[in-house]
Image (cartoon, rainbow, N blue to C red; front, top):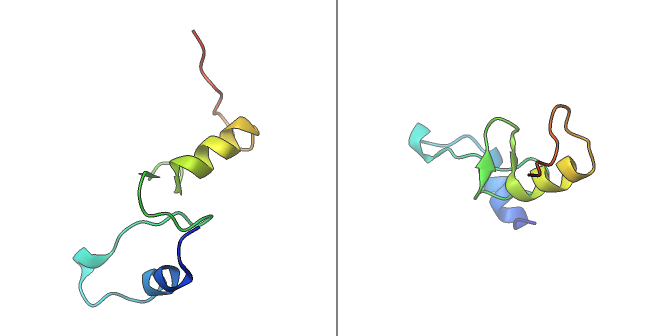
Length: 61
């Protein structure tokens, strides 16, 4: 989980647009963010393994 102060800072309107960045809405992580699914890779992996993301399944070969 991200620090609460970082989550609050992210929620505020930024003075300059280039300062905006993506955060996972579930855990607050800013790195390894997947835009297509709007979450970080850790939350994506967890939800995909529980089959809670439609159309996503674990690949195997």
